[in-house]
Length: 249
Image (cartoon, rainbow, N blue to C red; front, side, top):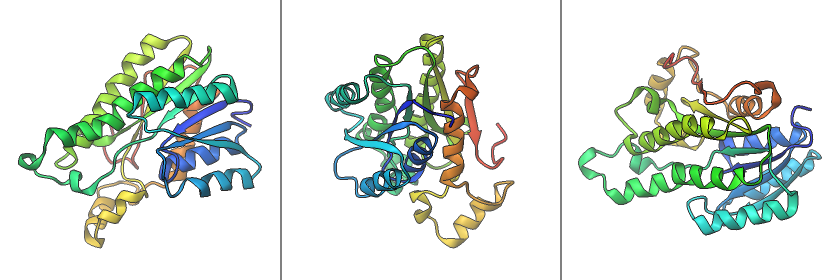
């Protein structure tokens, strides 16, 4: 198995891509720490699924934007696992009201809300993880294709993901050779945000993708598995795009 004996923390893993990453990591032999803020309604099914398949996992509740919460999370991880080999930063804010908001309607509080989780949360979780990591460890972050090429919607979201992109490249050099740091840039995937789209809008999105479909969470999880495993041992500081060919970056 590709992650046999590894200890992995997946933030935002109660549903969507984070949940799929947690499941495949467990199937590949990792002990997985599921993370989400308290009250996540989808968390228990993910844990039950992993354990039902014979995998090893447990839940640590923490708001990744809260320094004290992150510190407490890592104290529990250290107590139970003794260290960490892989961190996957998938926690993020998805809010339709912020996605298509006009510029004049945006407020600084909206920016702070998104940056607190996507950018600051990625920083705090990485900072805490590195203390528990040894040589050969891996951090995988998440950005989005609008952060690479721009778009007419999602300004706040894309800006926060742009910060994650820059952070990835900086940390890759700062943490080498002990820890590799890479980033997955996702296009349109079958996650909760598709509920925002009516039939015609979804069709227009699909037509803009050479593969003529949205990605599946399991496909995103396969990419995370590669970047977390020793198969990518000479890859760091890179942004790997998974978008069906839409931006051809």
